[in-house]
Image 1 (cartoon, rainbow, N blue to C red):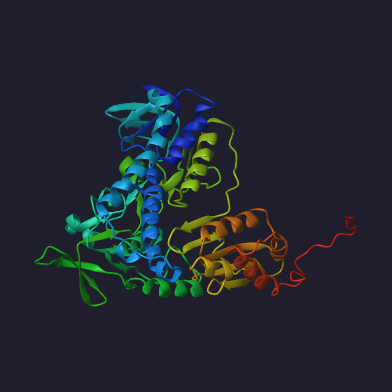
Image 2 (image 1 turned 45 degrees about the vertical axis):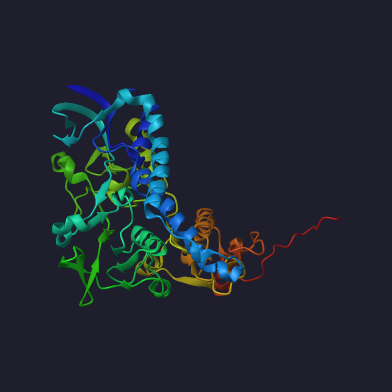
Length: 470
């Protein structure tokens, strides 16, 4: 039986970054993967979805053309087959960018499924191998709720969406988290008759009650959205899927299931590891070392642990796992949480969310700004959005933010950097803000927080004791 220093299960984002760290120290390792290569992000997630959204946003801009004096917008049309071909073309380019570097270590890649035999032994393609350390980065898969299972021919998962040869005439989007609201809005912009269904009023992961209500109302003005869930009731004579929504039957060509993803641990016979599993089937891990608490030679980075299923977090966790699998254990400080939904306008959360702060009984203040009437938003014809920044009421330190905002992806980064640097509201306000930019809205929100904190609203410029002579 071959014994390896490290066995990495999964060649996704976290598995690949873990491999890079392991390879710096030892050549005695293997990577095992039985699925399509190229990472979830490049194949079916971050990248193809952004291509699809870009097409939809470009086409959607035509509605503003008449006001801008641009003629002919009414004559534009969508060839959905070409749209999907374009999406796949760029998707394949991104996947190629992931796979090409893998050629340098093909001798370390085993194509097959790994299953635990015990704490140190794995079964792969009928053979057993032994590992001193095991990094389990086997990712996740879309959830298909049981009531929908018998209507599989009418369902499209998020892993399958970009393989559509063309877009259906009508589509229900079940689940309005990050992926659901992104694709649902884009489908509607491209002329697909779209209906969105979710449970509760949280869209795109928002938790702030005021922003949740604001965003829900704005999206409902674009296409029908229902908040009490749905269940399939049959197939019509015309072959359409029938969904019961708020007591009425809606018929659609297809339903996009975007109700979340589940880890792939159950496919690895994780029970043979011999540790206690939580209710979600995942053993307890240390998020700063990626070690399984009851089996410290096993690491669970990436989507498989369900903690922060976002690419940059998966990459970080892979680095942590890879480092600790071959070197002395190091506890790594995690980055400030940052999540972005590429809807139009963007939705984002940074640092500690409203719900997190309330649940932990933190004494905080909220600075707010609306982007309706904000200068740069007026120019861009994107007067929609609401931003809340949260700060410690006693110290003034920035804690977090939630928003829907034009160019919110950039605002979220600025706030995350400020939180990472442990800036107070006062210190953040003294940073430069150009005019006219969307970032001026952030300054307005910071000012709103500052006036609620003693000593934080004493002006926006620092005094110098000895002014320079010009």
